[in-house]
Image 1: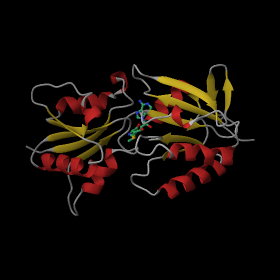
Image 2: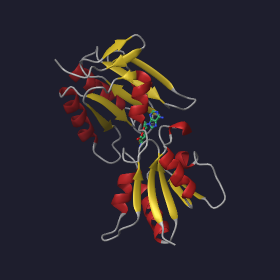
Image 3: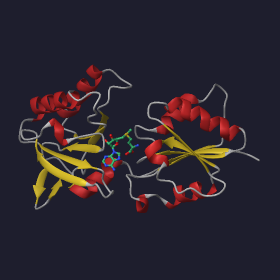
Image 4: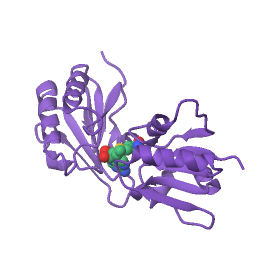
Length: 241
Ligand SMILES: C[S@@+](CC[C@H](N)C(=O)[O-])C[C@H]1O[C@@H](n2cnc3c(N)ncnc32)[C@H](O)[C@@H]1O
């Protein structure tokens, strides 16, 4: 039997936001591999083995998936959101050995910033960038530099992994940098656990924002200089005059 490995995005949380293509891959799988809360979203069934592992073991998890596929398994590696956005797709490529050519597919999913943007209105309607605020895989000085340059370039910005218990002060520092570059009146939105029963969203200004408004289930969106409120919504005009 020929094995394969598919890296699939489960979307932001609600199963209605999982694409039919991902649902089909999961139906054909013999093994599902992923971080514990993502694997917990997969319904157990006969013929399917669930391999849930802890955070920060991405390369080991990716290698395990490749080895099971090489042994004939039909393996789906699950990520939340989109697997190519701060997630497992890159880890799979990092885990490949020279000359290894597995039957590999990457299936997209709805990433958190797009699910959040749709709830908020259209804050990413003009040029934007996405920045992972975690310094697990890069130095904090680089995070700060990218933040500052993105703000100076007047991008709208989406921030993933904004704040965790192990690095509680960094998001406060990120807000300071943003206030310096964008001013206190700039709009900032917090979207937590989008599409799940725990969902909350709020919009305020950088002047009013505090670090405790974000946690690891939150994606944060900062508008550009033209982003404005319209009724309950926030949108960024498509053009610049
Ligand atoms: C390791 S990254 C994974 C991103 C994922 N691959 C994606 O495309 O959405 C985890 C971060 O994504 C964001 N996130 C994931 N799901 C979310 C949701 N349902 N609501 C808000 N933010 C979410 C949070 O910023 C969280 O800290």
